[in-house]
Image (cartoon, rainbow, N blue to C red; front, side):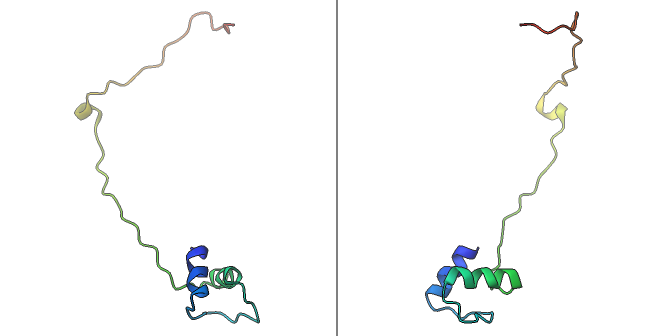
Length: 74
C-alpha cells in the first residue's frame, strides 16, 4: 500500500500530511500510513463458504491405531 501511494505522490498527487520539508515519496507515504490518512481503500472479494459434511463427500473418519511395543524404530 505504501508503494502504491508513494508512486501516486511521485506523480504529483496531493499530500495529506505535513511533510516538514521531506521530499522522498516513500517517507511521505509512510507518514500518511502512520497517521491514517492514506486515501486508498482495499476491497477484497469474499467467498461464501458452505460447510461440507463427511457423508456428502464420502470420507470415513480415521481412528488412531495403538502401536504395540511403543518403541522407537531405527
